[in-house]
Length: 111
Image (cartoon, rainbow, N blue to C red; front, side, top):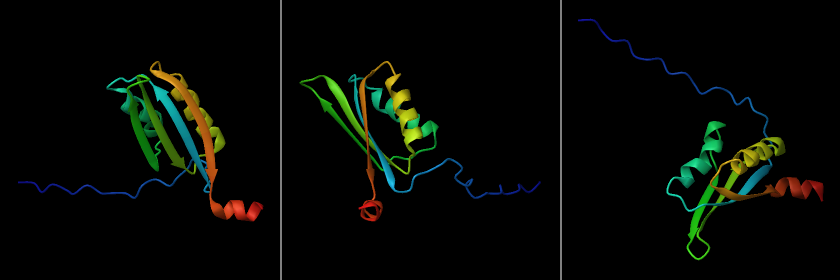
């Protein structure tokens, strides 16, 4: 009987994408009320290795639409613009609005 060797676990790779530590990108997405909409809307974030700080989804029956708000910390403007374009290209998406928030430390330093 041969002994099985234990797999060697390596630490996660060092973050290589550019980040903006004081910036939180906010996405307001309006989509068709499809049962598979939410995973499709989160896929562009997952493909880039991003974990949202917040995800809120609401089905508005009167308007027959799904409204999803996603916030992701440390995204640069270029990366959040890219994700927004990717979301807008999805057939089930009706609208994508973006905004950003900055930490209070940066705001105090700028003032």
